[in-house]
Image (cartoon, rainbow, N blue to C red; front, side, top):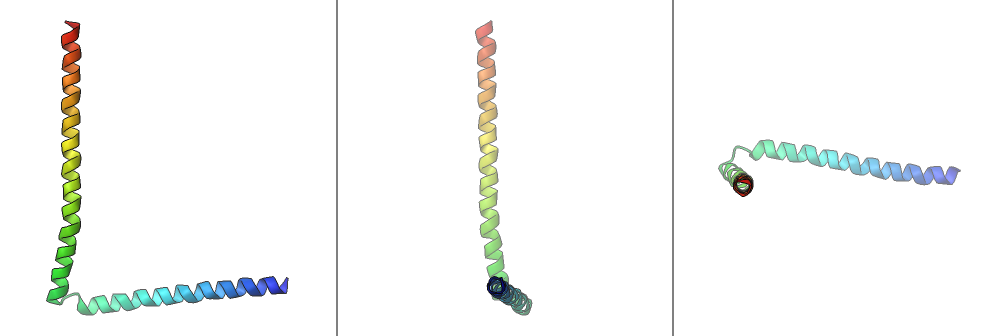
Length: 87
């Protein structure tokens, strides 16, 4: 029983150590970001990144809009065909 507890305690200690390192790394990254966020090259890089992401999202949104338009046109054609067939 004691040996099992020691292994679990060691594993818990290792997880705790890794969690602390990750938290401190996140704090370091925030500090570095605060120091460099107003530099012109960082502003330009952020703008390029935002444009790349928003461009893809905008193209996807336009594609969905076009697909919906085609579907509604097809529904209209099918409904008109059914109406004409009944006459």
